[in-house]
Image (cartoon, rainbow, N blue to C red; front, side, top):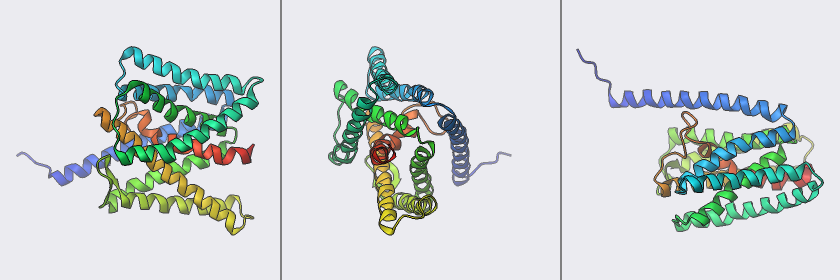
Length: 289
């Protein structure tokens, strides 16, 4: 006798299996990240993080439609840019490197807060290789640089990363449970306004709790500034997520790659961070330094 599984049951099993795979991959990546974040010296962290940025560059080059030689050149440009900052940070040019980094963070913030929302609103499409190369550089290098600079305060960088991770997790579950109204159906059909609300709510709770625990002596205005900061982080994370989805849509790709089981590629995991890390570095580094 043939036993048939109903579509609803099959869909539920597939969803649980996919979620289990995502959790396992995220757990392994999280453990590896935390180990490197807290145990490696600055130069070790900077050099090691060039590896995922190189892999992300390879994925971006593929989405941009580059052929083999073009992909190699783009990856080399990204890695060389990162290594140039590493060399500057650990030489007599350290002060200039930090000044240049702040300028780059400000440019990245304008890129994500002004240009990218306009790009998405207008629905711009381009396969112009030099333009996509410049955009890819702006997506990847400032984010790597922010992670490299903030790692000197590991707990601070972890707190920043948690904003994005909590927003992502809350949006995923709120969207699956309550999602009805599409956020941007032409860009990413799976994202909903309910997911966005869930992300903001969860991160604001996190921000309040973290602010009260780690800075209990702050006044109400300081706590309000913290709330504004984490809310801006969530907004930028959504912009980063949508922008990568738009680039993938233009390339006719569902995921940026297949390297991470259940998650797609490196770009699929750092899309929100590419938009938020430069802003966090611009916000914290003048104070922390």
